[in-house]
Length: 461
Figure 1 (tube, rainbow, N blue to C red):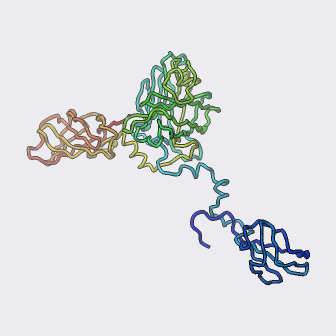
Figure 2 (cartoon, rainbow, N blue to C red):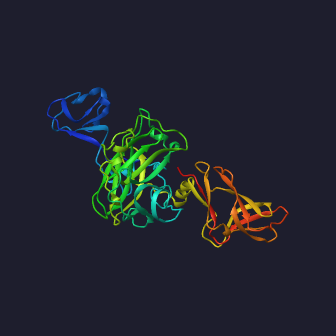
Figure 3 (cartoon, one colour):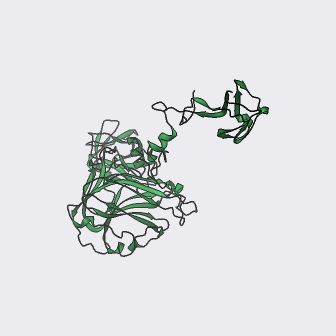
């Protein structure tokens, strides 16, 4: 028989029945309790009895007359069946859902449940490594920032060291290259991602229905011990902190941490920074002199990283992370892998490279002549930006070229003022090293002739 939805656990083969051996009495006990006479069909000597000739009460059956051992008496329990068989291979049953399939595979199965962007560390528009870093900045994999204050010198890189058999191709690696074994009070380093308020309204923060959130991630380090993860509410200066332990050196371990919902302090519904998720790596006494803030409360620096190991105490130290997922609820589902192009476009909302691809020459923008020494063109961003971005150009400005309708190939000398770029597009001005643009208005192509010129549009939080 065809069915819609989940196939029943049991496949029934026959109607439940009971043979009654007569004892010279009219009253007998049934195997099953029934509600009324119509729940059973009674046969005596192969003749079905009219419901008006017998009565039932629970498990008690009273016939219209007595029967002896020589009489044949059967009771069929209508609507009750017995006998099962194992469902066909490949069918889905309730038993299989509760037993053979992990809860993580059937809970929270809705798209974009991961509030973290680029949690698999696969997008790295800025480059795959950055060395000699001693201050805050976005340096390598997209959406991830390092906050450093006098806590040694670091190299950050997109690494191919990943947990085996988990589907990840990359991790982020933080490597100490100049140690700070005795940090001053205000020294600190942590690895963070900041989230927009309008992306977080489903948390219902600041209401009586505030949702718990769970963060899961894979982590590895040569330095074992206690580490701290913090959720910081920029809108209301509140935070909550939890610890996790790296138990075995140089071994990938999966961590899952649940944070209670916060009924105080609503998240602003806009494109500004609201929550910051921080993985502490090293810290001075300013951040460790109190008690770890394991429930939501007003920000107190002394309670932010109590117990945190000092990853900066040796140049042998390194720390890896990948598979970061932050989701609503008290349990962690399997990591949500997004297609590469989808992940890239989510990152480009915050940072985009225009024109530069390392090739031998490609069009940066279509332009018009402003003067014999000035070309001005427009660029439409691939993805609308979070806010009006900051523009910067990549490479030597002499790598820019202008080709005009008469075949001119003119070299750039400087970038002219770009005005205020919008969220969707900007205009780009190129000053030329010499006059030569044709006086007749025509389209001009600005080329990064040597593959080394372009623009970046930065709208990071």
